[in-house]
Image 1 (cartoon, helix red, strand yellow):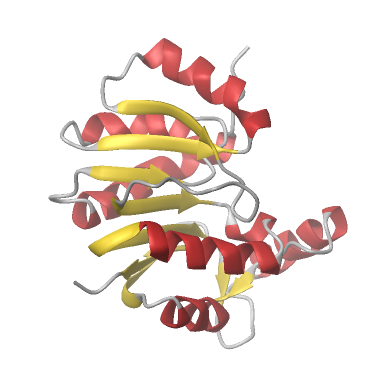
Image 2 (image 1 turned 30 degrees about the vertical axis):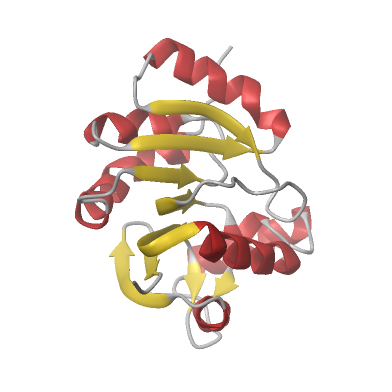
Length: 197
């Protein structure tokens, strides 16, 4: 049986609208934390000239493969085994990296690994697009995000909604420049950094 994430169905259309802007002219995308595989199956067909490489920890691979097998998409690749701090990242470079709803379930050291390795994997001129909830100026953007953060920390004290300013410092330290901060439905954002040419 395929795994299913309701949030993927809820956020996929707004994410697509942003990616239509940011992925124009891109040819190779690495998705970090493909999860169930639903985003890849929904989004990749909209970019037929783009090769979409899925990835996640090995436990998630059967679910991703179930979605990919059913969809039979020619431009989506089977998942790479990738744990942001533990696995060797792909040797190939990508001109786009996409990740949805991952930073708040990682520990902070994993977030640091994520930014360093993503920047190293991104080609000059490439874009790094991250979707999820974020805090600004040390505060929550909504009561629902505050409650979600409490739930995350009860489940795993190392997780939690990340501060935009802290992520921006990581990005700058890794040589990435903020390109756009998109407001999204349900108190989420899509942050887009680029690696200068």
